[in-house]
Amino acid sequence: MSEDVQLDKVSMDFGSFRAVDNVDVTIRAGEFFSFLGPSGCGKTTILRMVSGFIDPTQGAVRIGGRDMRGIRPNQRPTALIFQNLALFPLMPVWENIAFGLEVRGMDPAKRRTRAEELLRLVDLPAAADKTVGQLSGGQRQRVAVARALAVEPKVMLLDEPLSALDLKLRQHMRSELRSIQKRTNVTFIYITHDQGEALAMSDRVGIMSHGVLQQVGVPQEIYNHPANGFVASFVGENNVFPGRVISASSGAGRIETAFGTFNARLGPGIDQGALAKLYVRPEHSMLQPNAVDGMNALPVEVTEVAFEGNFINVHARGELGGAYMAQLRNNPRATVPSIGAQLRLNFAGDDGVVLADEVGARH
Image 1 (cartoon, rainbow, N blue to C red):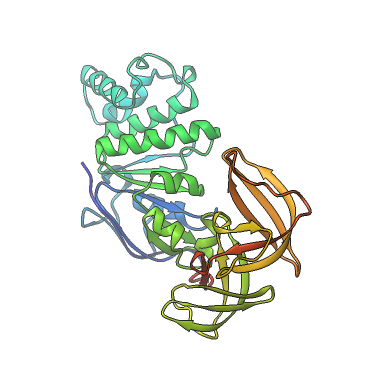
Image 2 (cartoon, helix red, strand yellow):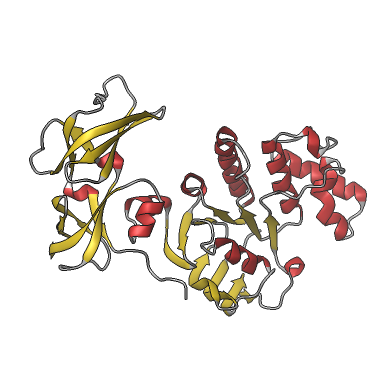
């Protein structure tokens, strides 16, 4: 039921503007793969190339080893779920789901049977004769998935399908989509700018910026071992210290910044003398009355305390400038500092990483 998708050094130009630049990645059969990045980074253009609405300027898109150049969207083993879902409001739910089967000439009784099977798959067994207007936002999402599955695609393409939903429903639909994907074993290619969606649902994530694929990895690798400064900044929060590496040995070193000299891990390609930035996650930053032996320390003043429910963000300002944040778990044992408190921002050298900026730029 699934096939792999190979993007073989794919580029896409619109006149003099390069939207996608030399993207080279293979999405495995049965994998849930997300392209994550800001608006305009090229991720939707990739989806359009896979679906067949455009052909790449350079390189090749292969599905199951077959070059897709010149093959029309309706002839590809793919199904696309749009951001607006594009359901037919005047049709009952089962006819929405079976629409692609009607186009293919399947008789009405078989179409109805198949639609009801898919409604059970997406946990909407009683919705067949309802109208789209009678469904909630999450139910409509599931109908859109069922309609796409009706034509038995090898590859499912999803273009930010949860963006219009509220937070709680988005979180629920993440697990629903992941569950459906695992039950069907169809290859899912998911487009999003929401890091939470990508990290929670995906087997692997590809981070895009300015048309360039910056890093591909499992969610834990993307978050804990970013390849460059763009990935570190886009996926999660960071305290950032620009500076110059003054020593380097066996993947560790010291970076001299305007706010102090710190020990840290060195990211890919970082050597002594490099101009780079030190990135430290707020959850690895501790606000304490004094410096801690063996840890990096920076004098700060607390400027704001933001309660976020399951955690608390404490914002601070350095003596020499700069804005920083430490994240605390919300539990009865947490000591929350008061605004104006003079403290030290402490972090271990292993919890900071020195990285170069993003790879590549549009031309």
